[in-house]
Length: 279
Image (cartoon, rainbow, N blue to C red; front, top):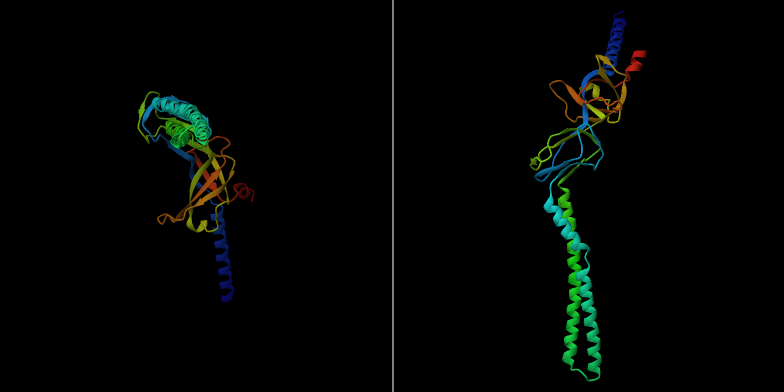
């Protein structure tokens, strides 16, 4: 009799544990959505705002120009170095002088062979040819240097142009045309809201079976009602738990094709809530 009661009590304990585990698996956790990226963009150089190419709400692609600073000196230097890099006058002149020196050397060599000129004249002609060869090499090096200086000047001028580092939406523009700004001053807020991101505090014991790549279901709370679940995925599991609440942060990303704003209330589940409802 006593043995049957013990078996029954153990059986009921197992049922309770299973029920508690199931309840945890189907738990829905309240959270707040966030933008996947929320960037404050600025320049690495000070300057005066020349142009604003975008407005709040504009969708931009990676590399699109957002803001330009005035850089008249840089543009002037670019023109100077471009002219020097593209000009072949110095090289052509040096080549012509070399050709003339080689002709004179050959003529002098013939005269020396005929005893019509002294060896000193030939030596002089040979040295003139050698000098002109060096002049050609110098002209070529100077043109190569001009090309490198052009690249350096263009790169420096590029720092006066603020470009989108990724696809996104312009949330705010914090400067006006004509305003003088400092380096590293935030000027534009760029956000990425598709996909959205949500950081979920999950009970530590419930995270042992979760891994990056697992599915998660996110429901937007709209007008106090839950929208249809959106299937997302776990992209990060915190390496350190919160000892005060005995929870671990689980980061979930989910598609936002409906363009909901970040900051909305959501409910996250790690099992399909629609299947739970059908059961």
